[in-house]
Image (cartoon, rainbow, N blue to C red; front, side, top):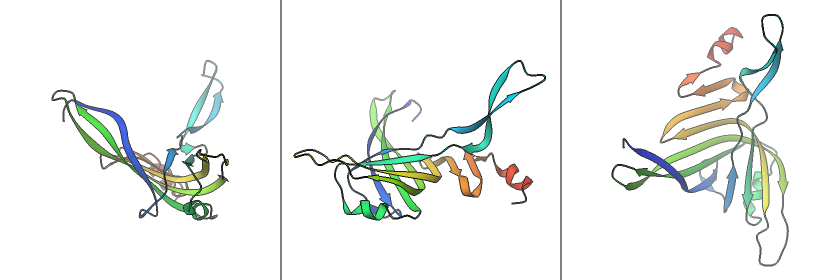
Length: 173
C-alpha cells in the first residue's frame, strides 16, 4: 500500500497476562518524556536542558472503566501486571480509495499506583479509574517493534536501535 493513510483507531481490547480480556475500558498510554538536566558553562551561550540518554520520567498508564468489575480487584493487587492493548487502526489507500486495518499492540509491565472506584449515580457510568506505573513498554505498529523502554533492564530501543547498549557495556552489564 504505497499511499497509506492511517486514519483512526477502529477499536481495541485490554488484556492481562496476554490472555484475559478485561472489561470495557478506555486507555491512556504513558507519556515518554526524557529526564533532562540543565547544562551551562564555558563554551555555551547560555543554558540548555539536555536529555539523559534512555532515561524517562514516570510513565503512567490509566484504565478508565465504565463500572466496577471483578478485574479491578485483581488489577489492584500490589504486584507487576502484564497488560496488553491490542488495537486495529483504520488505513486508507488514498490511490485506490479502499480501507483496511493494521494491528497496533502495546505491551506494558505495570504496577498499580491507585484505584479510584468512581461515583454512584443512577443510570450513569461509574468512571472507575486504575492508574499504573509502567516499568517496561513495547509498542508494535503493523507487527513491527517501534519502541521498547525497559527501565529495570536498561533498554531503550527505537526502530531496532538499542540506544542503551553501549551504556550497559560501559557499566559491565
